[in-house]
Image (cartoon, rainbow, N blue to C red; front, side, top):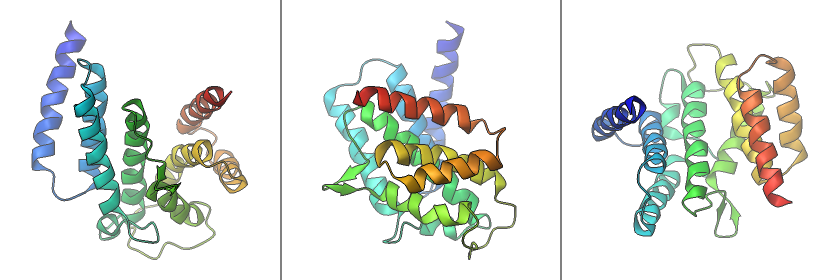
Length: 195
């Protein structure tokens, strides 16, 4: 019972934060993701509610990215790379939950979604193939570790040798990353569903 009380408390904290969140920041994205998780924990959601949640997330996706996969709201920050990866991680996790609600955000009108475009945009910076051209007042290593989650999602949704190579490169660079276990389990579960 204590854990249910804690989850209810957490829900109200997140709900309050959501009311105070501005625009489409990374915090607002994580709040939406957390609300989806808590909604999944709580009573069964009606089909209408599931569609509403998925529609909100689609709307968020459409407003987050430019045509190149950049996230203008995050690029304006002092740790623009870190926030770009942070926000995209929340969106990917939200997309995973949206699948539970019956909405596949990895496809859009028959083509890959903005999620793929955004992940593809960040890959050269994570692999040090390009220099980050926006303000980043701290190092990028912590965010590059999180890229393992994004790349594993991309590989599961849009299999490509480029994602495999990037995962291999980042795994060798960050062998102690907690995202290695998470991403391996995610890829394994996706592949088992296809069999």
